[in-house]
Length: 268
Image (cartoon, rainbow, N blue to C red; front, side, top):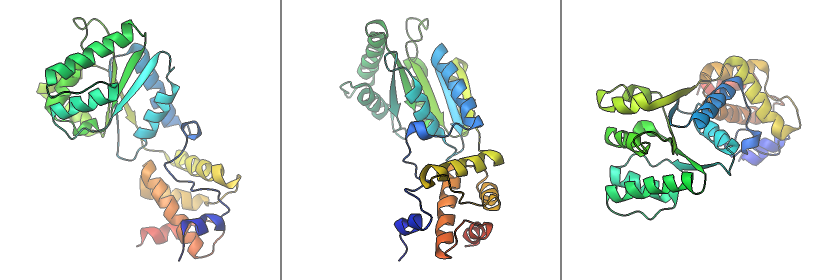
């Protein structure tokens, strides 16, 4: 029976090159990712509400990790919420948990606790909270309306919290609804994570392999090009295809991943 350990040993790899368990400082700053990072830095500087969108698997979560890591810890504090397929009370419960507050059963009380806590962080601790709400495209319209209220401090004259709504591309379409016009008008910056261009895919694959191989070339250019075309530049699909192609190459006792191995994967 073939195990991943055998596959990695065959190619002299010290670890899985396409694992999502990769340290933030080892993530590759490709041009598209760098552009998105620069836009997020502008949002953190000006504060307010921002939107981050992209296809599923395009690397949004990696981008969030990188952005959060680069925020000065003495000036900013990040809070991450991903439980979005919920009602308003559950949503506020998750927010309270994220801020380290005791939740209760009433929306108004939890809203006030969160608001007071955010103001205290700004005025007393001199720390600006950044609230990242992942999978925000799955939020109900009633909760999206609450986002605007959460960001309203002192008659909307103070940016006491930065809220980053992250989700798939139809999040933008939802904000086009008349019921959400107040939220849409409050968005300071919209960032879109693009899928990888062909040269970026090749650089990405080579970099991930180099991390665990000592710099040995493993994928032929034809194989990498085929992976890019078949994946449409979506990072999660690239990782999956690359790993499966490695396994195919191992089963044929090949020293490299050739286009034929990728094609065999596509022909299943």
